[in-house]
Image (cartoon, rainbow, N blue to C red; front, top):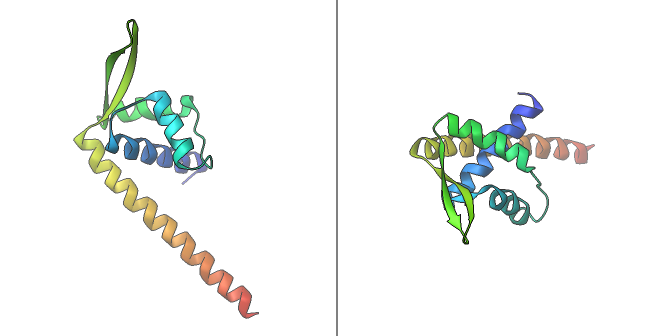
Length: 115
C-alpha cells in the first residue's frame, strides 16, 4: 500500500466516522478533524473534496443543499447505508493495522531493552 492509499484510507475513515455522527458540510469536516485531533491532523479542503467526490460516486455518501441565512446555501454530506458498511470495514482494518504496528514496535522495544 502506498502512502497516498494509506492517507486516502484514513481520510475516508475520518469523513465517514464524522458523518456517522451527523450530516456535515465541508468546512465543518475539515475543522472537526483538526479540533478533535487536538491539531495533530490537518486535512486540506481539497483532500476532503476529492475523497468526498469518490465516496459520493461510490454511493457511500450523498449530498444535499440547505439554505443557511437568507441567501447562502451549504452542501451537506450524508452517510448512506453502503457507507456505514464501508466505515465498519475501514475501522476494523485500521484497528488491525494500528494494533499490529504497535505490537511490532513493542516487541522491538523489548528486545532493545534486553540488550
